[in-house]
Image (cartoon, rainbow, N blue to C red; front, side):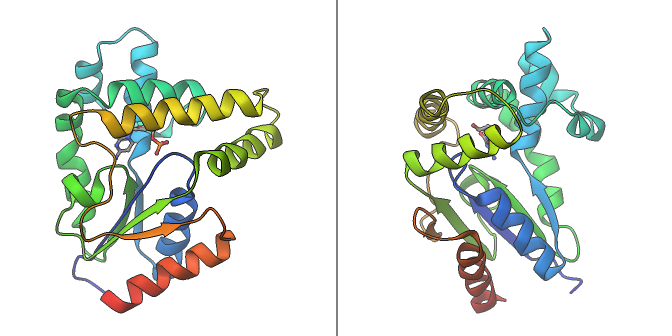
Amino acid sequence: MTASFTIAIDGPAAAGKGTISKAVAAALDLAHLDTGLLYRAVGVKVLEGMPAIAAAQSLTPEDLQRGDLRGPEAAQAASKVAVIAEVRAALVDFQRAFARRAGGAVLDGRDIGTVICPYAEVKLFVTASAEVRAQRRFLELSAKGEAETLEEVLADVKARDERDMNRSEAPLKPAEDAVVIDTSDLAIEEAVARALQEVATRR
Ligand code: DC
């Protein structure tokens, strides 16, 4: 496939959208961009003392390779810088260019179907209850030996949901034409199969 074909996958933290996005991209041989990494990279620069807007405007591909982007501190910092309109604006062109690359792309985030790629051929909104998401994130963190209690992880998930859904700039919500996949009671293989079915009907 040489024409562009964009799959937008949005949803709250730890709903499974990252895993689904990677699996869909691998199955269909599409490029994949985890847009949360952009906000995380800006967030860690702010934790290091850089002003948020300057950090977003000077972001480089190398910044996305940093080893410290996946942890809870980076996640909270990302969610905080993500409310700033100028930060979001600085990251738009890169995401749109990636989305329209020849061969097709999967982008996952919070506002891909609503703001970044309203023209996406496929829009999915992957969600799950806060409790299920916190439980999954807790197991992930425990497996890595990172000490956080389930209560702390749940509080973290809820704080990010609250901020991501209620900000005025590009709040987290399903696009009107998005297909919602609730993964609360789905195994990851089932969720990936559902996503691939949706893509197949639109390709
Ligand atoms: O997907 P993630 O957990 O890595 O995202 C981290 C934070 O970045 C998230 O809480 C909100 C923000 N974000 C955003 O506002 N828009 C996106 N497209 C992706 C992430």
